[in-house]
Image: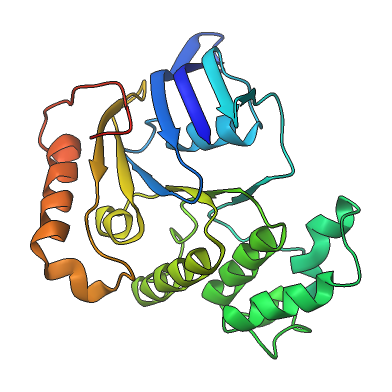
Length: 261
């Protein structure tokens, strides 16, 4: 469904010099697949998401969705950032429905669907609250519901739990799995947390330091539904060790990011 074919991205630095963020990244993501992306800070993970979202153009190679080159933002793609980016003056329900209203896609069912999503996310009864009346975790749930209400075929998540405390982060990880299981869109999920990546994903893409390249794609063989009880399993530990070896072990990977690890 999503295909990156030898994609590169170079930015112009403040000093006028070239900054190569990504180099020859190739990756395929199937419909309904959950793929996590990990790597050191500055390796181009967020840039990769922005390329798939159509927010920035590739400098080399091609990004395609269903065979069509991505040249700009698309209605079937939604993005969740590290900060919830909620409208401070709008209540929860209006925040969730805002993108559809902005795109003139809202109809008589929109509010009912938004309320149903909020209920699934544990936010029933908070529809009329303002963002400042919610905890950080609750605000991020609103942001995720806002993205899911668009019924995206592709959900891009850029460290959505990075600013949360450890307990809230675990709660949100399980919440995301529950919502994804119900909707089954393709997910590209950027994180710095190796355990989080292994818990959530079907595959974990490991990026090299800048310029970012795909050095390994780790298939996660844990059965679903997932839970933190699986962290002690041999498969969980195998995946985590393999990822850590690339990031912290000082050795590179082989291959160009094909589907099979």
